Length: 170
Ligand code: ADP
Image (cartoon, rainbow, N blue to C red; front, side):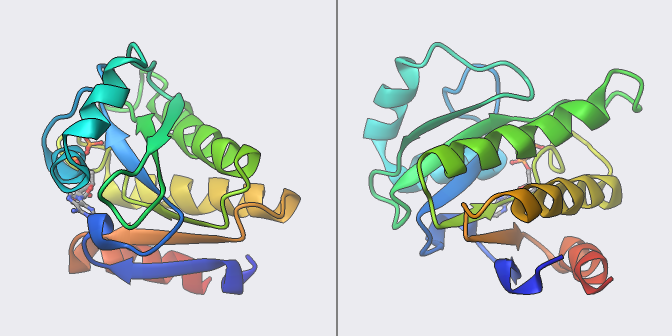
């Protein structure tokens, strides 16, 4: 992987000074718990008003809004799969979250994009497998495209940070 185009940070994604952050949303796009709730809280009520117009989003797909009170100018909302043991297409649906988010960033010529660990909270995706998919899909995309120029994986805890750090070292 082109290491200079990928970074790893442990922290709160709502505070990131990047052009766009990715939200681990649900099908309604109307907010929820975890990182979704934190992003809606930080961005303010105008975000919910824009999300209401989007009429939801299918699992594995992504939609973009403004960032409102965030430093980030855009939010890419992607809907990760709920983990059911791995037999319900979870792997390819999670890969699709990364692919469609990166494709939106490319289309909008977004230079810096920060991802949380999609589906690794209440949706229960195994963290090591989710990180492998995140890194592999991002690597594949960046090898082919010049936007986004940089992707930052933002972990929320040392355990997930270590998983990504080992993968990115390889
Ligand atoms: P999902 O429903 O897709 O599993 P969650 O929000 O429950 O989404 O969790 C996704 C990941 O985001 C988890 O790894 C969780 O630890 C992480 N997370 C929660 N809050 C934040 C935050 N403020 N910044 C970055 N990551 C966060």
